[in-house]
Amino acid sequence: MSDDQPLFGLHFSNIPIANLRMEFAHHLGLLRREDFRRLFLPESDELPQTNYLVWYGMPDELLSFLAQRAILGIESFVRYAAVQAGAVSGRDIGEVFAIIRDPWKRFKGGTAEILYNKILGHVDSSLSMKVSNPDLWEVTLPFYRQIRNPLFHGSYFNDPGAEGTLQVFEYIARVYAWIDSWIPPLQRQPRKIDGPTVTFRLKATRGPTVD
Image (cartoon, rainbow, N blue to C red; front, side, top):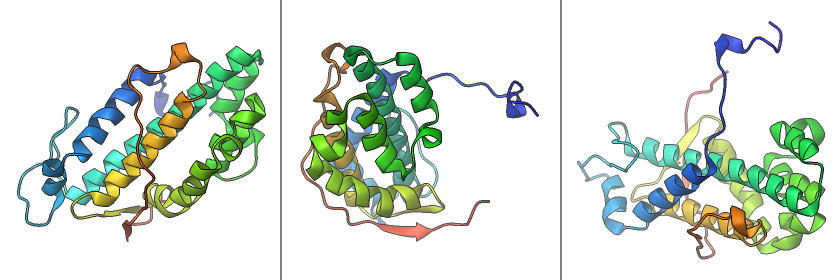
């Protein structure tokens, strides 16, 4: 099958960036509430509910799903921000778009290195997370190794009480705040989210291998 004929006939549209920020802000707000986190204790028999869903599955699987959505959101947003920064700095926007569509074709390295250093460093060397916020980079690299990658490769959280998941969201809030510090002002979302330094205390439960 040629590239002109999409597999299974599926086509894609971009997720509105504002939707990503609103969903993240909503779930962060819920996780900051003690009464919501109590729903994930073993003795709770209430169904967790957000503005986006009512969950009938296992509680830890919901926490993993929310974290996956939040990670996908920030990984999409940082690429969008790279385009906006490129436009302001006078970069060839066509080239920047080509890079963010498939950055692994252009750059070598892990996902975190490419998203937060290689793409942004190509647009403006001062934007690389290693350069502009080394303290945040010191958290980002182990986050990807210890949490993001297992979560996207067959594991899910074992996090009664959702305290570790809350810290995942607080970390992602720090990444959004870092992007907001350099993205062109007109492209920022109206609600800026910030959070404290976090320490991760999650155990991953191994799931089935998916080929």
